[in-house]
Amino acid sequence: MKVLVTGATGFLGHALSLRLKELGHEVLGTGRNLEQGQMLQEQGVHFVASDLKQPDAISELCQGQEMVFHCAALSTPWGKYINFYQANVMGTLHVIQGCMAHDVKRLIHVSTPSIYFTEQDSVDVKEDASLPSEPISLYAKTKLMAEGLIDQAHENGLNVITIRPRAIFGPGDTTILPRLIKRLERGQLRIIGDGKNLVDLTYVDNVVDALILCMESGDHTLGKKYNISSGQPVPLWDMIHLLCEELGHVPPTQHLPYKKAMRLAGFLEWLYGTFFFGLEPPITRFTATAMAKSQTLNIDAARQDLGYDPKVSPEEGMKRFIAWWKDPS
Image: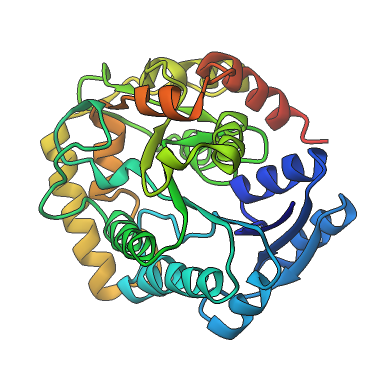
């Protein structure tokens, strides 16, 4: 099959592109990171640099493609609304327009379960759960808006499937665990809340498996959204302690009450937003909530409809990540 992957220079998009190539598909990857793009080229994936803000360029990339995987997004806890909007909303709109203009058979869209979460524990959340009146972050807000565009595209005749993978990690991760390790190295990490919160960590290969399953899933999956995780919630701070033991860092022992952390985060967001915009505060309300509250997903729908069966547990995934972190070569 001829397949386009947006965000191919990102963590998930890169892993997906290589898997598709291994399966014998003709893969075209696009993204903005020229260095990562060159690496994809060397690994047999055709790469074209592009920006999702350019509708004509995206439309041209969609021409002749049978499947499009939309993995590109701006996913960070801090930034300007306009940047999130352009990347996550307008970028998705341009991909949709390209798919519809060139009769792409199926668009598989990567969204986020962050749209569910509030400042309370959220456990065993299903796809039809009530959503908060105000999303927890600009990332969640704009990804929810993007899902609205996907829904409209489906009503207009485009075959679409959406997945909502939680906390993707593994070798090559540049976001979740590296940011955490950086805080550990500086001795800046505090246990927010009681330290007993459960979370989903999803190994990258499991997410790639889910995306591959979406390629050939039945028509009953079209227009639907699917939670994707390891299906095995783990105590977050136990996993952080494991990371510390393996990498030789002193594990955090000091606690910061959640309410105090949220007040501090709110103040820092105001301070940085007013005087230092462009710099990320040491803590945001989004990250404080993610570090303190239980946030787990129900993946029964993906198991039943897609045949999704997560093969790599969080513990095994962490071992693989640690081995790679110690020796990236």
